[in-house]
Amino acid sequence: MKRNATAVWNGTVKEGNGHLTTQSTTLNETQYSFNSRFAEGVGTNPEELLAAAHAGCFTMKLSAELTQAGFTPEELKTTSVINLDPSIGKITKSELTLTAKVPGISEEDFQKYAKIAEEGCPVSAAFNFEITLNATLV
Image (tube, rainbow, N blue to C red; front, side):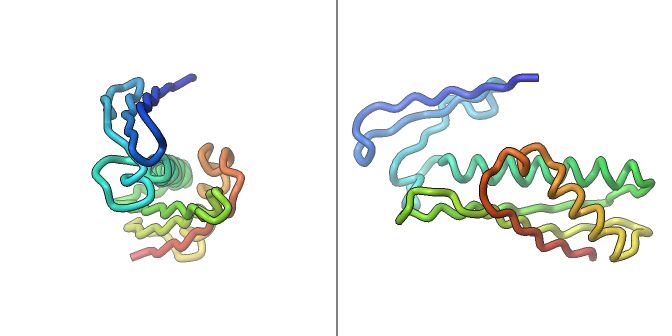
């Protein structure tokens, strides 16, 4: 399976702007700029997209693990915070925070499956930086 996205940029890094389009066109010429990346400008940015990819991948992987173990999650809600250190120009961490409603599961089993999903998610495997997980069963 292959998926693709296209980025177009016009102008200098600070004054220019660009847009992103994904294969599915869910993002269709979605704007991004220096301000949307390093300030609070309108548009998306690469770190936000990595956060969405990581949260989505991890949550689907956890659902698969729980389902395979005989549990039906009522709700899995994951936030990923991507940390970009501008002083070194490097992404240093993805912090996953999960809140889950899974009827009938013990805290021990929940934590076990959450860890399996965090380590087995294809996006986690692709990242070359620290990943943390804070999983809460409610």
